[in-house]
Image 1 (tube, rainbow, N blue to C red):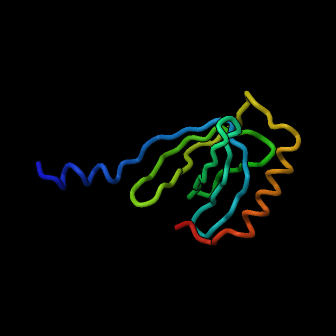
Image 2: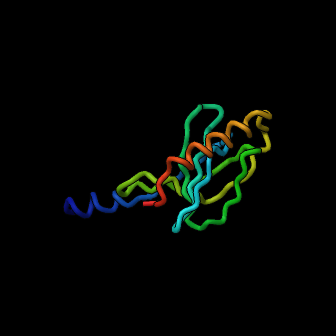
Length: 115
């Protein structure tokens, strides 16, 4: 086996990811995809999730469980495969207002491309 046959296949691997307790911060629609900015309310991590099918319906008034693939060829893309409501948790009433404010700030400063 040579170096190329060992290294090249590993560059194009997709890895699974899943996250729970996610709250929508913003949603931006582009020509080739929809990008959701979501915050894990437990760990305070923020994720940028890509929906290339443009089929996911996510609102800021519920928590969600998301799973998909991590594409790490040249950039890190978290590509959504499935979304379901997190029935274990429900957001506090002021979360929706904060999410809407964050969405407005993000929309004002975002670029219009998925690449």
